[in-house]
Image (cartoon, rainbow, N blue to C red; front, side, top):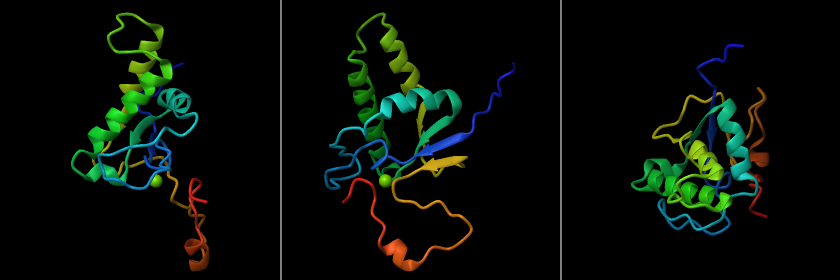
Length: 141
Ligand SMILES: [Mg+2]
């Protein structure tokens, strides 16, 4: 079987999707909270099927993309309980595979699909203004 060299782009929002975002906003390069449960397991599978790109309101701020990249590196390493100085480790291979296949876009990607905590899937029928005003993301009761 020949595998297609071009994977569809999966665009991931950051705050409220990768980052649990339970604290208040503290700046584009300050990321205080833990990953959402299952983040690393999801990313490990997603990179096999998709060209995974992270795009956030942080992406357009100085230091925002670097901060997201550093946060992801720290949490993926922590998930597998390993350090970069380990010379050989199956877990380190998994860490590197994830980190080398997650891209932090400067502009909004031309995505096949986007996962965002503050979006509606448009069905062709416009929602009511009232339903939009009543919207609450999953992590804000
Ligand atoms: Mg968000």
